[in-house]
Image (cartoon, rainbow, N blue to C red; front, side, top):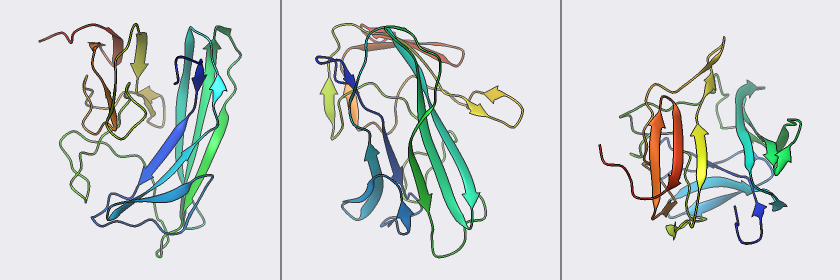
Length: 195
């Protein structure tokens, strides 16, 4: 979000975290593969769109196997931008990964305490902060509720471990407070509450 002009963009980054160095080959989507030292990541960002507050919506990630490739569908829905809008999914990227050996299964995996093959924490994260590259943001005001959920085959479920901090942020904020209420994180400006 670019708050001064009232613009937002939705982005996705797909890393190959099996080992270091890691490479991504056979990747097709709207974006491109970028090198980060010895590692590579696939990246795409939508053009900017305007928004009005209050703003609400959700992100969707659909992972499947098709023809021996992993297929990742990425979408979002804006439910409210100033006023209510009927939900409509915008599928902004469809990433196909066709490695040398056929893909047998594809899924999202994030477990507390586990590391990827390259030694990074295996986590799902929602982060308020600067655009990236370690940028730090200070908020004048913020009132938000965030939640992570996945379809377990019969209903929506929360990940087994939820924390009020990030393990792998590419940006950060100086003045946000997080209050966990079950699987919902309520975020506002202020000093972090100490347990």
